[in-house]
Image (cartoon, rainbow, N blue to C red; front, side):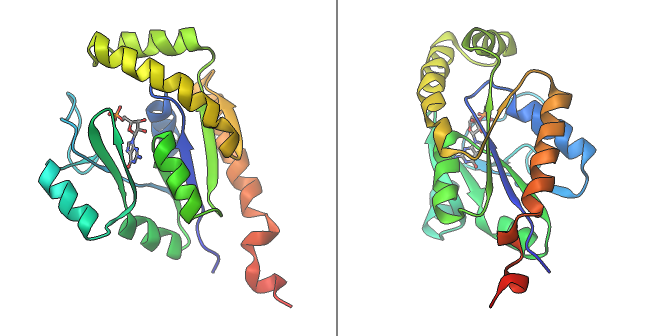
Length: 197
Ligand code: 5GP
């Protein structure tokens, strides 16, 4: 059985990754979402174990010591990390796994797992990105400035990714991700058993 795909979707904060992931997972029940751990406080409506596994700083540090993360990063003064065991188990069983993580994390995963599929979601424009972050209303103006500053430096790392998708409409983005997945599954490198000499 061939392994599942590891699909990593990232892009600057506020690009709409969360909305795209939700729509993709709604449409494609065969894709598993990796739920990250974080030390950030839950936002209204977020559920532990669904949105994130919410951890204290101490709990998170213990998990780091146990080598429980595929990658982890300090994003806006909070830790975020991808649990290793879930991703390994799903991919091993042939299931496709989606990671929605920030750019630093994605590049760490790429170093460890180059056969993954790395997709960079870009906002239609930087003005649009600013509007989205401001209208979300969940961050202070200081946090907004920090996210915008980070967004422009993250845009420069797009060249490390395999695919670039502009987030114009959610349905179009989802269709493009599905097309990428379909093509990726046909790549010769995914059929090691059949190509061995
Ligand atoms: P938020 O606080 O808005 O949920 O997420 C802030 C940033 O952390 C987003 O860019 C999000 O993609 C990223 N993030 C979420 N989970 C992880 C993770 O497991 N690892 C890393 N490196 N970043 C993550």
